[in-house]
Length: 259
Image 1 (cartoon, rainbow, N blue to C red):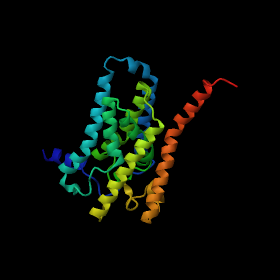
Image 2: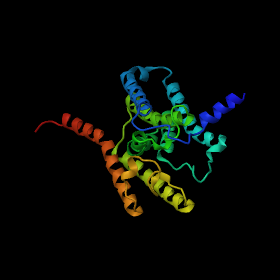
Image 3: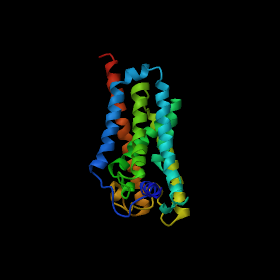
Image 4: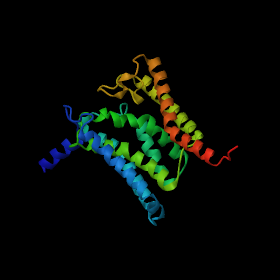
């Protein structure tokens, strides 16, 4: 019994030394699995669309996403050694809310619930995939490693599922809605960081991360940092919409009679 207890303490805990390193097999494998899943959805999109229990597939994926997101907080509550407290773990993250929105999108087919996760995936979550520094001390032998990758890859799978199987796509107004939601989240993060102080760093607006990441290039000056982040997000929103813009231009030319 003691051995089982020790296993759970270890599995749900975190190490004192670095257990996960960027650009290793443990880093690339979950991304490869995600890409393979998206390609599989594309290849079988017609069969999935005609499948009589297709709705149940979406419900199952949505359930996995919700449980994955909630398990992050269950772990913090259930493992006292992690020293969790409400101030440091408020639900003020693009990744977390993106997963929640995407899960309800799968259930309802709501366009707004598609728009926001779509742009957040390519302007926020993508950085977590490139440099997943939050799991530096929790490698493949820990629960947090799997929770992190499920949380940050199922959103992409859900969005591309709705694109390939249900024909959903973003519009210009989609970017406006997603940008407005981003600004609202940034304002909430600003006030949370200011009121809590100390180590509070929601949306990484207060300072760079403790461990090295792609966000280290951001300026340390707060005002310049926020403006720079806004500019980067704007560019990423444009790049996320660019393939659809090109598609629309090509289709417009295709159906426009030659002079």
